[in-house]
Amino acid sequence: MSTLDAAFDVLQCPSCGEPLSPADGGAECGNRHRFDRARQGYLSLRAAHKGKGAPATGDTPEMLEARERFQADGFHDAIAEAVLEAVPEDSRGWLADLGGGTGWYASQVLDASPDLRGIVLDASAPAVRVAARAHDRLAAVSADVWTGIPLRDASVAVALRIFSPGSAAEVRRILAPGGRAVLVVPHGDHQRELQHGLKLMRVPAGKAEEVAASIPDARLVSAREVRSRVALSIEQALDAVFMGPNAFHQDREKVRAVLEEWAAPINVTIAVTVVTLELE
Ligand SMILES: C[S@@+](CC[C@H](N)C(=O)[O-])C[C@H]1O[C@@H](n2cnc3c(N)ncnc32)[C@H](O)[C@@H]1O
Ligand SMILES: [Zn+2]
Image (cartoon, rainbow, N blue to C red; front, top):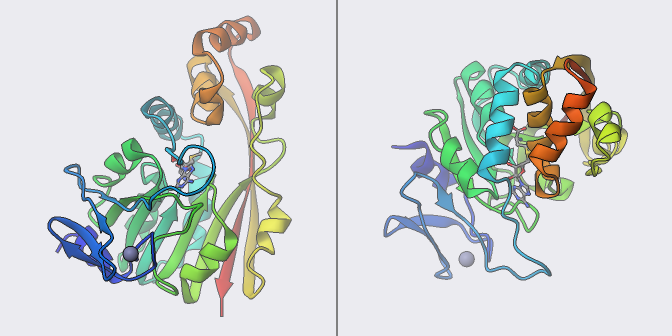
């Protein structure tokens, strides 16, 4: 059985919250809400859009490629190590990677924890296409985690939310008793040299202390600061800018011209806190 087929044990309908079952190559709930499974191996659990504005579409292929290169260059390895430390190797059951992108973190946690299976949930279709092939024990679901996570109450042993949006109440809802949430929060000075020098917009991610207190009935296991200063080439600095939401507002060639004036290496601060919470 594929990991996506097994994931029906924990998936729920994004429209009404009823359990989902496989149907006609896709999925269906008891209220006859139907969802498609893409040829590329992910399930699309998008509810009819109700809120104001356009539905979340997540990162573009260019943003994903920039992030993949930046991660492959090792600049987020220390963050990944802290995430791995936060998940006990004998964890069993399901892991949910919320806004999990291409599944870079989820795959590493699954490698370290052989009794876990995982689901990446992300609004970006190109991201879940990659995540669907990232690991044997990883399924991929296209979903808007802001409008509700399509997972059942108390269904996961581990929830990751790494540089991603989502409500703490929803994280709390999907965690099983004894389950852990691992939440990566960038500090105000994360990538500050690029932020200030290029006058980039900041996406406030909330303060580490607020995130640590965001699930009132969970125990704070650890809040580990990961901080370094990395020396980047012009291309790497461009990736650092264009793997995030500034990609929607900046022109790569204009930013390149500014960075070339600064000259490589471009020294950039990496500063996040990895918050680990555990339910009773
Ligand atoms: C900064 S990236 C982080 C990706 C991954 N956690 C990592 O660190 O490699 C943020 C991710 O959140 C996704 N995203 C943004 N808004 C979302 C939403 N409302 N629901 C689900 N995913 C969303 C984006 O598509 C993107 O993959
Ligand atoms: Zn339904």
